[in-house]
Image 1 (cartoon, rainbow, N blue to C red):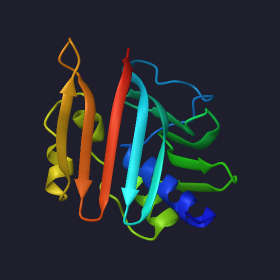
Image 2: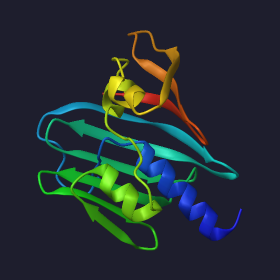
Image 3: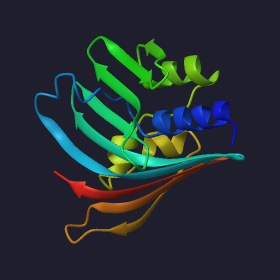
Image 4: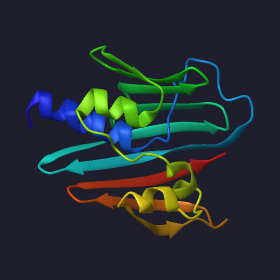
Length: 166
């Protein structure tokens, strides 16, 4: 895969995996709804990316860090009351009022990202489904929380394997 294609696949992966997210070095959500860690794999056409994800989701803020399989930082996504910032490893920064605006800046089109926090908790993902996404829970843990998920949209496939819940 070309370097530009790998970067674009990474951006797709980062943007797909957020309702909006935040940089782990910044202030964490005051009262996190959940924290998770795991692996993700994204494919868009011939482009693919796999890596690790750490996500803290709160009502007013999110923070997400996406790294390579060996732990090198690739993207940080921050959501707070001021909007969303996505910073790539280059470093290149994208800012917007919401994650969909950032996807339009980074990729040239809007990705439907609302509802992912519900999907990863096993709640109805009506926001994603209304926008044409198919959400499948492939496996649950002993507490009934999703352990493996697949999200698909024409031309895009995202898989998330959650290894740790807090």
